[in-house]
Length: 118
Image (cartoon, rainbow, N blue to C red):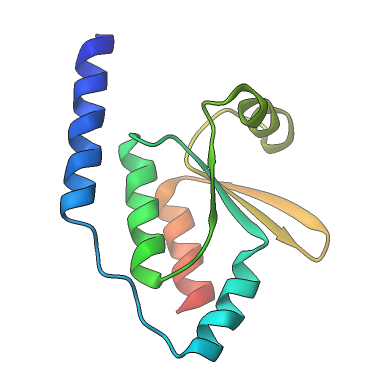
């Protein structure tokens, strides 16, 4: 089963690379403002997870610079479990006004990003 999942993961990554969406172009001043806002966001994800790929594609389509955190690394997995509440990806860590929120579910994350950065 491991081999099948590994092969499928590589196929997902290859197709994502070949059919990557175009990045949204904004005026420099507007992009700088959005880059400043996205510094408080980070996406905990696995590289070959199809739901994580879905969120990364949405991030690219919008031209957002959100930090990607590999949740397979022990230290990040521990942070995700202890502070986020569960070990599930994708998970968007949102820091606003000193408070940290953890958002799970790819569709919820994409809707949040579309509303905030549209």
